[in-house]
Length: 136
Image (cartoon, rainbow, N blue to C red; front, top):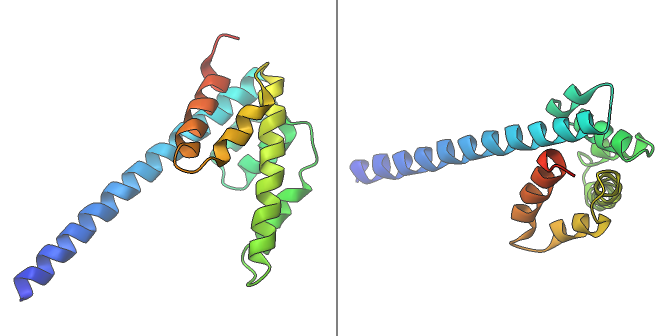
């Protein structure tokens, strides 16, 4: 019985480490992509892409919009308010991504494709890669 518990804990730990490594890799990729987009759009502080929450301020600046909706992140820690704050922040993020796509001479509707279940996450990675490293 104790051997089964140890095997189960080892399996759980293996999955947790694997998930952590995937998460770190995705964060590094997205930060690099956002930083590259910021450099191409001539932002003065592209390094903000590496700082959580500050990267949202950077996205708002790249979209040439106000940064104050980033304050909705605070509302996401308050029970019952977090759902509304999360939806509102999602809407602002979609608008920012739409305008960033247009600033990089790409169709703005690409940002909406991120919302499609199952393929939206992969498309988000591809979209940011195109925005960052394409020749256009």
